[in-house]
Image (cartoon, rainbow, N blue to C red):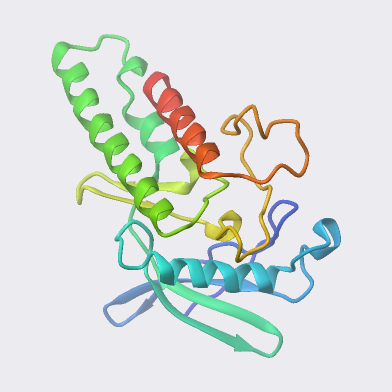
Length: 212
């Protein structure tokens, strides 16, 4: 199993590592170190956030809308989770690669194909968010970078649950991606995200991907 780490942002240094092969299984590992990320937020360190992410991945595991959680383990003071590696690209990349508006001479067939593709993506995304909400989870940081798509398999996954939380169970996070934050949260430091904020982010994703 190949492992690696990378510091990222002001919330947590927990990030996906390189692809690992183990027989027929493919997985990625995510690692967290004690106290990392805590100095800036003063609430939870990376280990607590990673354990929360593992719990949420297990909670939504039966939905088929996120990579499967394979294992959680600790080595010395570091905590690891191992999850399914999915062969996919982000919705951001998909939009850049296939958006018909980037074609200088689009045909009627190009418009039809683009419509069908993104109609499928958006319906799948709406269904995925609805299913996750039904599990009692607020995503908090929904953006095109956190949506993976495999058009050949007709599969869509939501990833990076470190910002997600269960209201009344977890410490709410304020992590979000600029451009996908509702006016209620934007500029209001410490505002607790809600499911309605997730729907705003989803609408912003649709608007961006439709006009990229």
